[in-house]
Image (cartoon, rainbow, N blue to C red; front, side, top):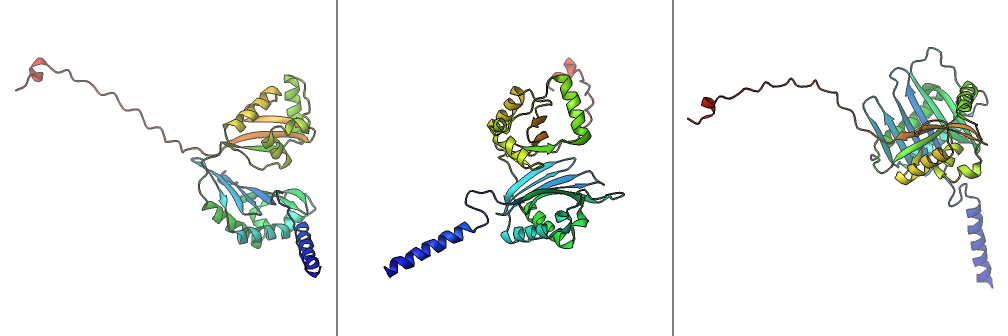
Length: 275
């Protein structure tokens, strides 16, 4: 009986430890996703990191577009999320849009979960503080060393449409036909679309051609306003502008001038005879 009691206590203790884990098995890991753009050069890159170390880096320049996906060191991730949670500008209850008059440096737009709430902050990169910038730089450096992604088909990104942009959309879409809000029940049939709407500005992978085709069929069937790669979804959660983004493309070679036509020299019979 004593052994059974000890065994029961151990089992209950293990169950209690499992119950107090911050993330249950099967739950999605906490994540943050950021877009950093340069006002001076116009270039930008997207970096996403999850608490379990999974990371994604998409860099675009005028000549190239590459995507890297893999895993980075847990300690770097831990340090970064600590700085995210301690960041004064991210935790601020004031407007998330920082004033950037005359600023010509890098701008960061970061989405992160703070106390269970998804927040969006836009500010100059150097406004986030020295500790945050250092932790961010370390995960950026580690992400840049990840292998190139070659298996993904594309990405889907959803952005909330508000204010004047929303008014403009409604005016243009109304001319094309009636605008009907789509229920979440119908949107969830296309899993990448629901994921993109639930977490705006995040790049949701479209893993293969079948996922792309399913999305395109949804757009066509619902007669959504826009194009195949940029369309609007009016829903009960709000209106979203959805964009399908490439994973990579090769740099286009500069077109060389066309060679001048070579004049053909007619050979005479005498010249064509062998000596």
